[in-house]
Image (cartoon, rainbow, N blue to C red):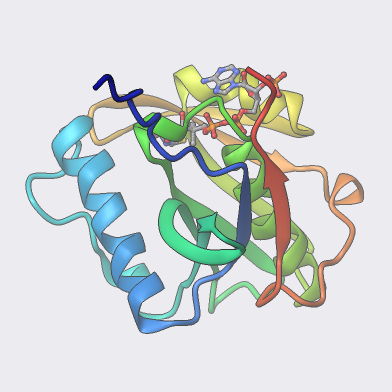
Length: 181
Ligand SMILES: CC(C)(COP(=O)(O)OP(=O)(O)OC[C@H]1O[C@@H](n2cnc3c(N)ncnc32)[C@H](O)[C@@H]1OP(=O)(O)O)[C@@H](O)C(=O)NCCC(=O)NCCS
């Protein structure tokens, strides 16, 4: 008897939202470690820092049968205590197998900036790795300055808030879809 191979499960839609459940937050931390420690080697075995004490983690969830299944992308946002209205995004990461497949990076940036906008953000900044500058420019960010961070070339960039209308329900977030193959 010949069995047809079962193709691997490929989720077709994803939800991008604030990571509120403990398992979502743990999975965001694990994905960051995977990307920034193991893959990029920017940190040795822990990329957490003081910002994590007050940052809001955001996750991209794959779905199975309509239910949240796994964290496949993450970013965090925080407001600078000394400069109310100034928000930053950092540690943007999408799991390798899901890059370029479902606009997860763009979705994470959308939830990050739009949710901060709804919380009184007047200036949203990020240090962007050189290779990702074109992605951010395509998403309405402007370069402000070139900086070296962790031995890697980065650009300080600012989002055009008019391209990111305030998102008032980031615990619900938004849905992105897998591109046609
Ligand atoms: C950067 C990263 C988060 C992008 O995630 P992603 O889910 O692949 O991005 P998207 O699919 O949303 O990309 C959106 C668009 O930008 C394009 N794009 C993605 N990465 C790009 C890049 N580095 N340069 C130029 N364009 C890029 C995509 O092709 C897509 O274009 P399209 O919609 O016209 O097809 C992901 O590559 C990643 O995790 N990299 C490793 C960690 C990292 O570098 N973090 C960022 C630190 S600044």
